[in-house]
Length: 152
Image (cartoon, rainbow, N blue to C red; front, side, top):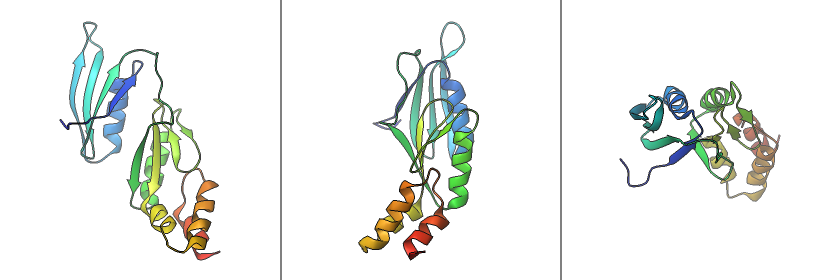
């Protein structure tokens, strides 16, 4: 286990969430499910793309919010579409500027590498147009970012 591991508090769905997340990311695996006396999952541990996570079923006292999100660095529009569609399905929600919430309430940022590349341009007009275009989007559309960058 890594020295620092994100620890996610769930009401009752830690095992379901873990299985869902592991199914989405190619290089992922379940490590362990610790069960309580009732046979239900209590603590789960898993890995997504090399990052270790733990989950806890601890009741409804605390909820996820936008203050902490999972940032997914996507190589292209197809990858953005894949993660966005999967995470917003079945009760997830779209938000602005690459943010979405999954059906378990966890927040994600689904970001194509092109966004950071184009916004990092030293020309403030080009990078500003990209920023302004992004601020109007929910799911990021790479072609629309490129149009903004090009001044179209």
